[in-house]
Image (tube, rainbow, N blue to C red; front, side, top):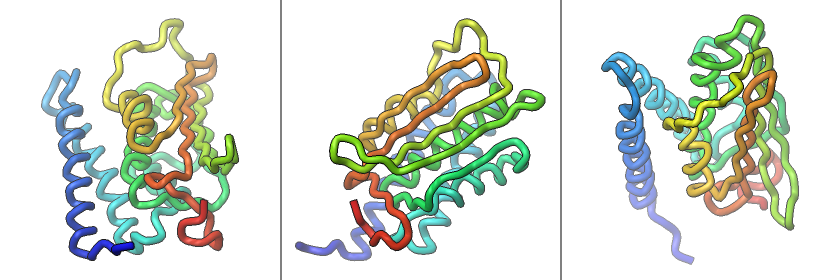
Length: 211
């Protein structure tokens, strides 16, 4: 097997980053009514990319710690620890999957700040993740459950960048299974990512690429 040179790996990562940036710039302008709205969305999404990139630069070969990613996004959006709970087994997301997962987390957080639990007095978010085996494959199940939010009878039908990312981009790029439910108490988002070549995850001590 031929190993990829450091320069080739760096070029590949740059191409991937620029592809994501182009998509963000293109989709951030859709449906927004002002330059300020566009600038705020763009700044937030690029900020999420910058944070996960900084985490990857520490040790790209071991990926990103999921718990650190969650708490880092909450800190960046000034969400206090009283407004959310986060729990799950030690999990690291490989660099190939880190950017889309970070963007998905950012979109969920911003949506909760504008329309969901973080915008409602007393609203709260329960964030959890676990490892499971299904059909002979290991999966990472990530659950985002909002509480204390009155949900309208007719949930929104228009799909912005956030829902597009959750429902189309993650399944396409990571072979993920995603589900969005609108319950009486708040929105529920579930993401299941297989331990595949594009989305390897592991616990410390399992080995760098254990299935």
